[in-house]
Length: 339
Ligand SMILES: [Zn+2]
Image (cartoon, rainbow, N blue to C red):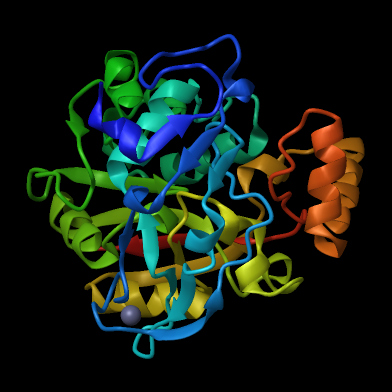
């Protein structure tokens, strides 16, 4: 029996390690204390931050599966903290990478960067327009199933990817023209001065150590190369609707770090980057909604905001996860920074 059973088990009859790809929604993961590690220090400055209260988790969901349950006493003890120095908000207990990787692997989760999503193709176009030469080399960190790399490759970039999940590694040959780096970004050894562009879409909120990750990225970029980041904005209207502790984004199991524009500019400047531009944007999941879908999202998110418990109950009656629903506004930050 795998040791993983100690911190990750299903409450249906599936055994750990068995993929049930036909019914990913049926998997329900129960996490105990041993699935988490304490992280009282700021993920960038490595000094203890001030507690600003426990995370409120009406349904402690994670993206691959939609449903994860955590022992109640445990999540009452996960606090949001704020760093005095850089302003980062972060969780002081984080799910361990082995657990996260296992959930990603079993859930058959896709990155879902569709070529038809205008918001995604716009990103490729922005990078392409910044290209000064043919065959520029782009590294996508947290590339997962490589949907963004596919688009970048089709746009003429040499592509490399990095990710810790087995799922990413298994599919990497189809999306990477150069190299695949398997492991946590904080630990991977990239070549120095190698990449013209590094992209990190929906990655910085997942980092265990922001400081180490930025050192790796900075060293791996060529002088004059660009880093692109998109991550949640904890000072956005969506985040402040019920307070950051209650924001759906903070409730996400794999989300550990929460930036705002001031914080991310400060951190990137401190890490040595120049020419930093940051703007509020909609996330890809709501950047491409039609009017009807936008209306539905608005109604769902308002219902969630009024009463997460009632919302979860009603969604449960319809066999849906009832995980937090994003208020359809500009609740992400799009950042460009240059080495
Ligand atoms: Zn800090």
